[in-house]
Length: 463
Image (tube, rainbow, N blue to C red):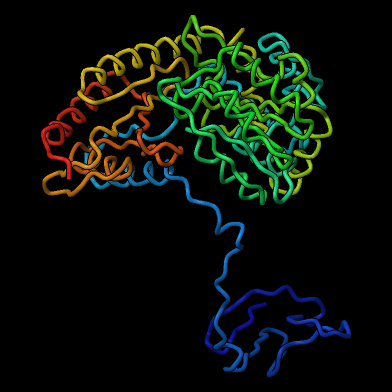
């Protein structure tokens, strides 16, 4: 039945025995608001002007208001809109491989659709996939789990967010080394926890100083987030440094470690990856997060997972059961195929890593030729985090003063038509993040544009 408001708007309300319910009184009886007229074919009601004119409360949850929007998403969206408008912007902002998903993985997804594997899966993920994840973690990472200690989610980002929500209480502290992935502090704020940012130095390859960590741990410290290989720096924590961090963590019973290992396979020899949970005494207090987006070029498939002690992982599963339920059945079939490609993704992944390394080497060489630029050569992932602070304080003709990483990125977008992400988004305003998940030809063109745009700044006076 169509129900018409006095201003002409209509709403569809299901009827049962021609009785309609809009409001419930204290007595429990159901009734319409005043001026109700009920008929067999048409049911209308009117609302008094004094009620209709009341303004809607536009307030947003204080918890959500405390969260900052993602600058990487904002810049990527802006660059995309410029391209759609015909502006030839080179986009080096998004953290997404430019390769297609390997054919065996794609075929597994297609076959899942053709074979009708399109229904809900168990909340924690299919047994087939969780068993495959357990096998991968044991063979490649040296950590042992059972399927009930794994939860598969709609991307590693969901796995990370659920972990923070599951273990943090209001007032807890989440320790985050900077530069950090943009979402870590906001996840802490959503959990009513306090992000505690620990700075690192480009001269130390952006790696956390254990002494600084030890000095910042308090009785409220609940979670330490480590990302290796790192987004945005590409730094990789060597095993020896992780062992020193583990020794500090072991002294504090409340402190857990959330180990984000999504880039583990995008690593450049002789550098190797170490899973934090594999270190002595760390299995019980580590939540390991990984996924399929980066190494297997499966960003759009949206699939990640968390592994850890059962009571923590079960709490993550409880949150997921009320938020999204299980991940895509089709993506899970594809993920099983991905884990079946061989150790560390086999030839398909090694081919991509080889290309990433070639691009990294080109960019490092190119940017080292630019005056005033400081670089820490990345050992993994597909990002350069470059110190451009030499150009801050200079006046750009027709643009204005370059004050910080954000204004420099705006300048390079306006003048050079290259989209990059300001380091301020990652907790280090001296730097800019460059994603080299693009073809070598595209990167060569981007470097030429950046160099050309920087020439006027090099000779500009400081203001």
